[in-house]
Length: 410
Image 1 (spheres, rainbow, N blue to C red):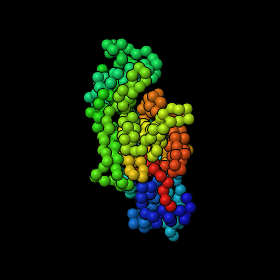
Image 2: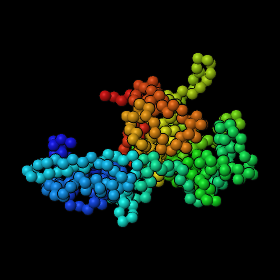
Image 3: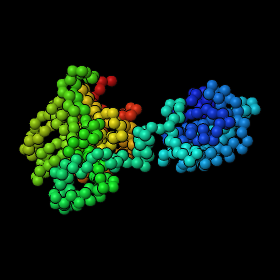
Image 4: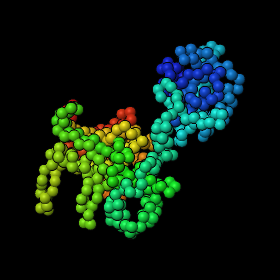
């Protein structure tokens, strides 16, 4: 770091990535700040700087050794920070810079044989709540919430008809006889639809979402709230409001025809009712639907991505589908997973938050094996349809995909 860069850091004050400390602090206090930074996006601890930006300078002998020892003894897994001293930052006063990158795993402070997880929230480093910790492990790929057992659920909470359809028709494998509960339990445990939790075998979150009789009984936030507005802004008076509930997967008959919609197809039907869909005859003389406002393939890919990749640890909100006179918005709870950004999505960068849900939706043909649905189907689909470029927006703890009905005026 150059002197100019250090001056700029201090001038901009403490924030989500910068903390000022005296070098007389306890080693566990330094560990706390570094752990919080590593569990967010990385950051700097400036030793020898007061909270009011006064430069006190460093006073501790063998400061570098003390910092490295703290990172080895007080942090698990250990961190190796970047360390440097800017001598005579002010005459006779030195400032030490301790920098950590974003951790590839979740770090904690180890003190008095007790572990404490810290996160950075603005200018504060504080202990993570249970929900925050679960999301943190999930973001680092160390914990898959979709495989967590759903307390109180059993195999009876799964729709056996949908399971038979999936294993027999989609996967084309033999299925146990209806009355062979032990064989069904083993099959569902091996495919992670059930959790092997002693003798209870509750459903996993993914299993219940995919094939549950009534997923919202246990997971009330697992539905989709669909609203069609007459204008371009939210309004209490809407053309239609529909809380869409039920399992993700549809139920099909022996001919492959849908007899009970899953969540994706419920959304498709809602949008069909509230947009212009024309009947046309193609060049082969076959009659079919023409989706005038938004292409069906784009809508389906957008909804599928929202269901497959949302953060199911956020229990306060459903997926939102909002249809306005000039646009369609699909809002998915949670940040993008594993370092994905909107720009990376456009290039086809892939990362799965809910791998089992993604795999099953791919088995049903809702997702392609190449994982290029965003650039190939959503972006290219809207450009080919009406020349508009979809918006991909990460807004706090939610992700928004916005499709435009017509080109926007400059």
